Length: 285
Image (cartoon, rainbow, N blue to C red; front, side, top):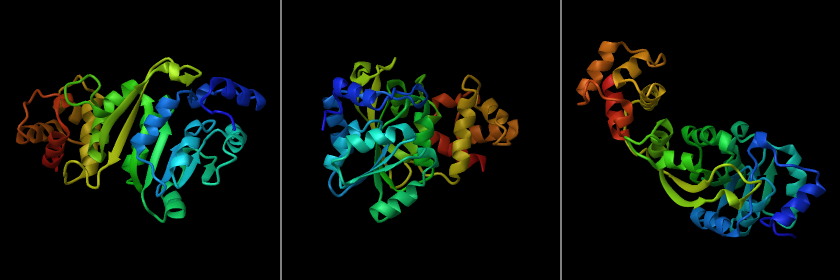
């Protein structure tokens, strides 16, 4: 077996299968062994674990996961990569490859079938263009997931960990911090990929909380308030709430809830913490 993180070997296997990295799938293959080790260590993989890998590509990370885990379930959307994965991972009996879109995959069923309904550990080098939808899908559906260790665009990772007042602070920040405890693992230069992307990346680990990090009476209402605030982030909070149709609140009701929460009438949503959004949501009931 060749080295799946070696550019020469990668070029050879792609040429043999007449395959080129697809921009539409955001494919950039990792070619740095050190970063592979960082991901495996951060994910805390053991032989007791079943790992769900999203977008295995040619199998570079998949191979290392299979060495560390009990089994790996790799979900790949690109059917043209399946023959390459079957060749590159031929020596491993603990890998199952599923040719599907992760957003249309029943992850709960995977946990039931392959892990006795126990939580999975998710590991992935996520395509930049669909990072947020995948993360939100994994978190909002309350799937049986213990942790999510992913490589994402550096800017997106910063959004996940930042707090009020930052230009990167937004709905993604609050959702990630509501459902998980995020931790930046390491930054990854664009030079560590083939083909080379235009931006640098970051490995981040999201450890799923047993209970949300704040208590709120109506979770759906909480996230409507958050989306309303950042939908028009330059507007005051009262106008953001009033103008967000799914909330269906009058200006007077919004102003009353803001005052009851102890906030200034001119407050903007981007200055509120997750706990303060929870207070606001409870006062809108």
